[in-house]
Length: 121
Image (cartoon, rainbow, N blue to C red; front, side):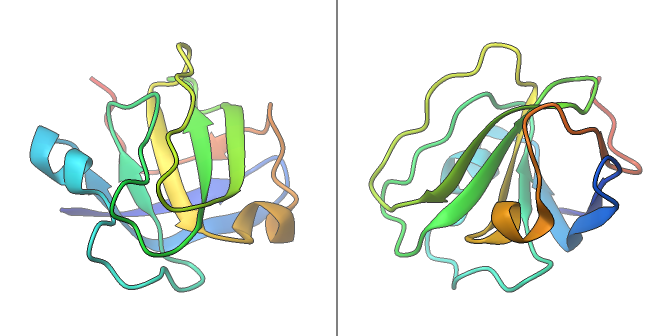
């Protein structure tokens, strides 16, 4: 998996300092299943994706749904295991973050993100 960094340029906050990208079906399906809870600065970017599931997860996460323009179109804070996120038709990718990241960074719907090196094809 590719390493990635995510900046919220609207808030001047680093959301992901050392994240991974899952671009193919199996890594996206597996996501964080079997993974230990994310540490601050970690994250997983699922592309393409406009929804997630929390089946077989053992810890909550924050979720950002992001448009091709890299604008945040929706969020789920502290999403619990065994839940399913709503489908957000305008989202092109999803960023899974440690629970509490959205609140700590002040991230809001409409914020502009910067993801260097991300090809959206």
